[in-house]
Structure formats: C-alpha cells, structure tokens
Length: 106
Image (tube, rainbow, N blue to C red; front, side, top):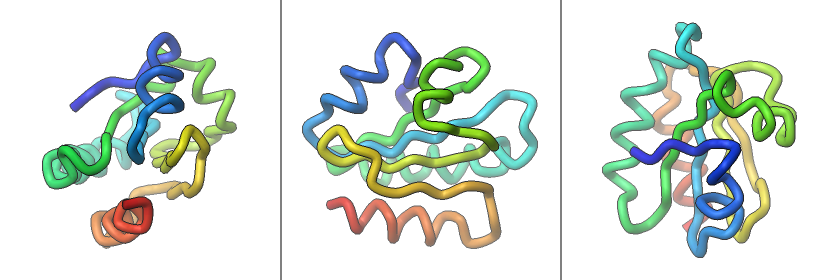
C-alpha cells in the first residue's frame, strides 16, 4: 500500500485521475491499528479501480492540518482532486461502510 506524505499528497491524491482513499492515522492509535488490516484488504480489492493510501499524521502534519483531521483514524475520500466524503473512527462494520463509500466514487 502506498504511503501519502506532505511531499507527495498533491501528486498522488489531488492530481490523481481516479478516486483516492486516504487513511489518516498514527502509530500510537489503537483504533488505527484495528482499521489497518481492513485498509490493506481494500487496497488489494480495489487495485486498478481506486487508490487506497495511508498517511501518518505525525510524519505529515501539514496535510492533516490542511484537511482539519482532528481525530484518528479518519478516512477521507477524494475524487477529481476534491474531498467528497469522510469517515471518522473505526466502528464495527467499518469495512462495509468503507466499501459503500468507495463504490459510490467509482
């Protein structure tokens, strides 16, 4: 899975031809760790259809601030360079919620 950073965010996400899903998280965040395998699965499932990326808010604070990410995990959905949807937290059933949101972008 690709890593989004302050340095590559514009090219990899905002200038991407297709939809992009970015999981904003942190290494110290328990719910982020629970969401991580789901994000990995979705990255494989949607390969070639949507780009699924991770961003560590401690390593890329500018991008987290730019999109007002105040709590983690936060998953943002981009299409045509614009944020079109978001999901905050890692609740049970998160995979189904994420899949519906990604499918809506395709």
